[in-house]
Image (cartoon, rainbow, N blue to C red):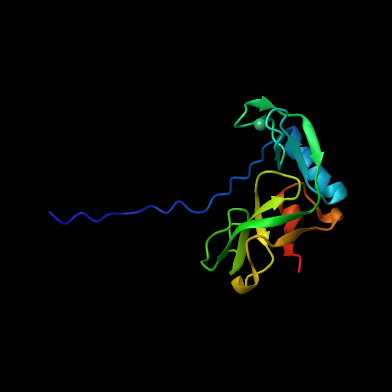
Length: 156
Ligand SMILES: [Zn+2]
């Protein structure tokens, strides 16, 4: 009897486009970006913390939220990582050009972090605590998703 050879089957490529609702507050969040190029948060009536992007429930308090708060387009870097390892970008299905910097940003007036790209890849020029400003797509190019925020620029 011959040795077992492990075989594989290549099924080819398949495309599975799908879409889902981003809900009332997710829609308002991207609408505010498209119309005013600024962020929208929501305040919890119990702990008073402002979350961005807005959501229906405050997790720690289990309170339903409805107090929308207009925020600015600026924030503070809380943490960052410059990525030099290529991997497949789930949004495009292709390699994202490296290097790029991903950051945790506290949007001014909010109490949580918002993660997005920081437009700087020289780690000697980035520090926790630096102020940043969001750079948005041109309003006519906006699609109502996270890519409407191109990146955050460090305010020097
Ligand atoms: Zn709360």
